[in-house]
Length: 177
Image (cartoon, rainbow, N blue to C red; front, side, top):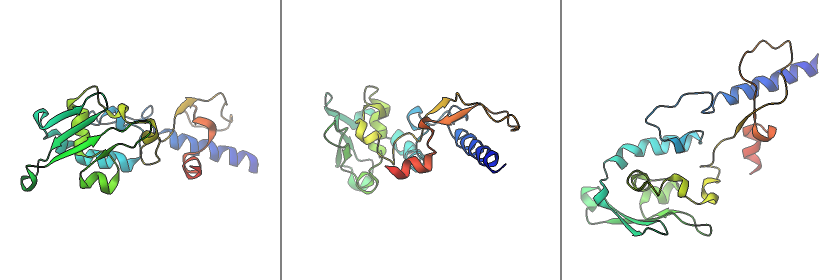
């Protein structure tokens, strides 16, 4: 009896986690695809910067080195109109960076990065280095896959059979890294 209750609890836990995935929920059409299934702190941060980024016009962004992903973005603040922020996408050896205070404070994509993502289609979120995208604050939460394990027959839920990739619940997986 106790073993069955534990198994049911595990299934409920996995089903609740699966509901958080884009495959099981709808995102706003305004939220860029690269933010789907990312940590809520990253989504909230970027969402708050998207409008500011949309105000940066293409002529305010210069590709300093289009091969390496180095750009200069003109400040939109009237107090610092002559300031250009240098940003770099980084590479396999270096982290991405921007000279602005928002990047220095959070290390999350600032309005300057978001503006480059918008105006330079070849330089989107996917161009950031793998080691940055695997950082706990940025990486996708988990991958959903169809389970080969069937539910206990006495469980009445009708939702899809989903598990967390590797079978490790998110909280435990993230705490190990």
